[in-house]
Image (cartoon, rainbow over all chains, first blue to last red; front, side):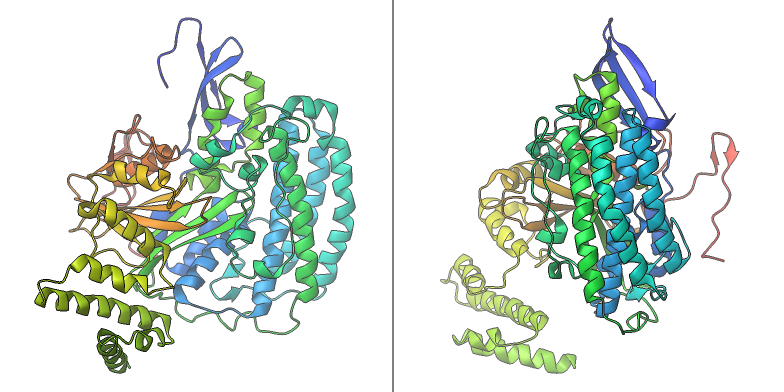
Length: 373
Length: 233
């Protein structure tokens, strides 16, 4: 942050503020109501994830990953177990793969519902938030049915999952999808094409693709800028290559490509794609197979390192794991997609009004637990 | 088991030296095959040393050319060796990473971003590693190209007591925060960074927590820090 000039003022937002989505502090230099510089101050939620991992066994790391991105715990588990299985060269049964895909996509819908609902709240629309939380609740009920937990699941284990699916699971998820798909139309009516919402978000905080790439922005934020990049499609891990789905990108429907509305709408479209994947996965789900069969008795990966990326609801979630052959990781680094998304905030909010900064920050869909780790 | 493998590799290398590359290419196991190829390169180098008139450059190129399953790392390493031969540590590089010296890193990173064959426009991750209490620190860069859709890993090691690496903040903008995080945890100084301050920890924190020889402070702001228990209970 440079020198503050005479007619400028430093405004402090946070650390406790509803629109910062967690404990984030923004030091904003304003000139009247125009923002000239923002310095995000992070670290309030730092829980020494990486240091803890070095002192835990590989199994004990999984609950920690839950707590990093607590909105999409399943996807965080998924990224870690995919990396570990690649390092240890474990082949998991088909049924486990399908169960994981179902859980990951359900969690993606739940995460996007929260992101979109809270985004509405940020720009002043209260009702859509209630609608979306009502529907997110159904997904949490499905998770509770499966593993007993509603938020931090510890569900995916290296080589398998903790519990097999309960009786009637498939019917429950079909029931949810039948209920959920028509609701998307409702969301569009109440929020997406709402005139006030479009006024607040269209043309605001445009993120050009080359800036996004240079800042390492990924996931829906990058796709909102019109870059067709999805690890599920471009570098398929697990069994994502077996499913037929599209990668929606921002097209500047109501404004410029890469504005807040595009980032919002990409998430809306992604929920449709997730529902598509879910239907295919439920149809092909193998009926038999022991979900505990491939779980190793002792997790001692061979010496070496691995960098494995997966597509979490927030973008490229990667784990860099270095093993020295002992039961504890020598080094475990988590590349957090929200960390890179927050770093671009200063670049795209300069010159906008203070109220627009809240809209831009909300559209990036950050989770502070994952940024601070 | 390992004896058998070594024998197999030895035989294949001998045949290949006589001109029969199929002996190596027909090995089914990928790991064994690459081991055999590495052994072949080594053997050829020794041959080259004996016959002083043969040029060593050509030899290593020959052995690489015939490979179809060459990894991106090996391919990029070859390009870099042509340009910055002194800065690449060939012995420590392997098929999954390129080990380079820190001195010219800024020039090399510019080359990696702008050269039409590389075009690594995205810095995916910077990972700091402590190689042990007595040895060096290391910085690992995972690069990715949106155009060519390929990825490499660059490793730079630096001495523990004088840990300095050139900053790539001006090449990839995300380098700013990633380098601050690595500095925060390992105390590696990124030369040329505009604002190298702690990012996750408070600014008055003492020590570099992810180094293996890190010791917890006894008091923090007058509060006694409880001793860490050994292991889990």
